[in-house]
Image 1 (cartoon, rainbow, N blue to C red):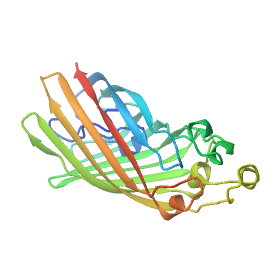
Image 2: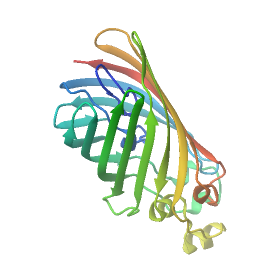
Image 3: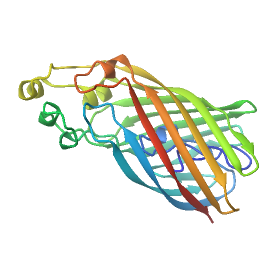
Length: 260
């Protein structure tokens, strides 16, 4: 999940976003050194869900990162480069999205009557374009396990600032979720409505803008500590769901890595 952790390391952009959460997801990923690198680490992630009376999720985050001229692996995802130079990086990617809904994790009586929504495997294309003024990062991916049959698109602009051992990477972007994806995680079927007393709900596709910040500090040539966060303003299609009582979602992650 260095994917959400340091976005640029050494010569060019080397970090990406957590897919940490997953949610993080590999959707935010992308950038890499031209040289081969391998690192291991561990951290913790906290996910603030928009579901009603839903427990905050605290997750262990294994940080396993591998980078070569042809392949990359970060956290919950990996890919194969179709194009890889200092300015542009295009790859086929696959990653696990751990976003889910467990009825038992909600203290809301009605939500406890709904069906479970599972995490899934996503696959598609990722692209990074580096400039002197920051870098464009985008991913287009679809569900390949037939859980939602949905599609997501993440596009953002980030800037990496380095001052000695300290690296800061603020970013702004937007996530698009298809109607199938929104319906799977936030829709309420007629049978669920009858059981729970909630109104049935069939959302359309929607856009959710976000802000994010990644901070890393190099303790030694090998050891680095990091922290990363993302604040997402949810689309109207998500906010209008009877499962939801927030207008935002959040993600925080922190940990330590060792580069070999």
